[in-house]
Length: 82
Image (cartoon, rainbow, N blue to C red; front, side):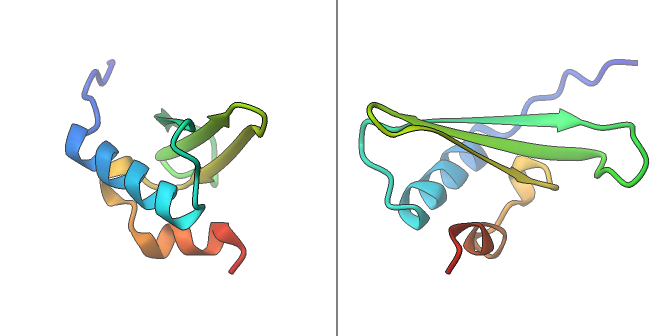
């Protein structure tokens, strides 16, 4: 009934590093990643929410319709607006 599996810690570290580089985030930025399960129509079964918080910069949030382990730089690049 409940899936208590957790994302791979190496995948979390990799995605955080990719976001930090892609968005040139300052060292004091706190990145949080969370996998969310969706049971609604037209919603990916598992998506990832990435939240960046830095002092004086407020908060930014991104969503990618994949589990953390499947996120690649190609998924992040369009989010930068480049």
